[in-house]
Length: 277
Image 1 (cartoon, rainbow, N blue to C red):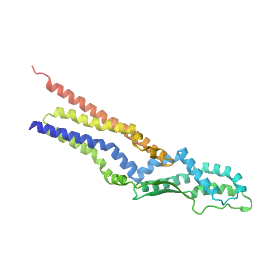
Image 2 (cartoon, rainbow, N blue to C red):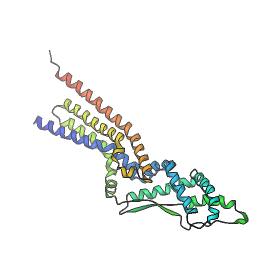
Image 3 (cartoon, rainbow, N blue to C red):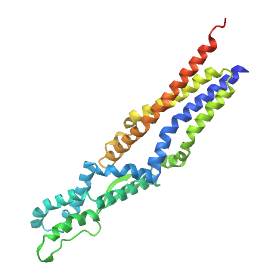
Image 4 (cartoon, rainbow, N blue to C red):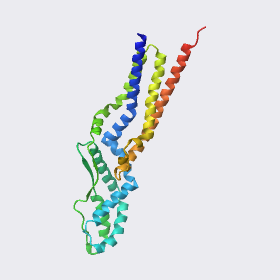
């Protein structure tokens, strides 16, 4: 009977380690990827990436100069001014608003059924480029502007895995209390509780250790085709950096708690096995 109780306690501790392993990445993904506000909070500063700004600036300049609406004779003199104004636009609140709107579309596309395109409305950028140029033109002349200056940044394929994760991840916050409950139950039914205490420490250490491994190696998990994408690459890398920065400290604490519990359990085992006089 005691052997059966100890086996059951061991199985509960293994289950606790599995559940505990899911807690850190699961809660992070729920708060920072699934939830729209959390996603936008992480994505907002990523608009300051120079390659992203250059890509959007170039797209806006192409809308102004590359649509054939400005005569070739004027294009050479207009181009340097357009480039200067496009660079200035990336420092304005209008650019940040345009970026936030684009990131909202990206978030919606991640969880949409079927393929979806992420488009950006470059109207604010076009206005920021053209308005200063028009101010310098004589006789109140104006430049033609594109009717719908919208470009497609990327196409997101259908991702049923993400939709499934969005259904399951809200329960990730229950993983930690469930882990603690499983550990307490294992200690309660174990026939050798001091050994079970060491096992509880190992389960906690394993969960924290896997969290550390994920924090250190998240870049290797993400497919290279996504990481190296011209538009998505800098965004994904920004999320990877945030994941590592958020997960690592918590995983260290979790690992440390597990190590302390192991030491306490080992000391108690040593005391229990000390020969009595």
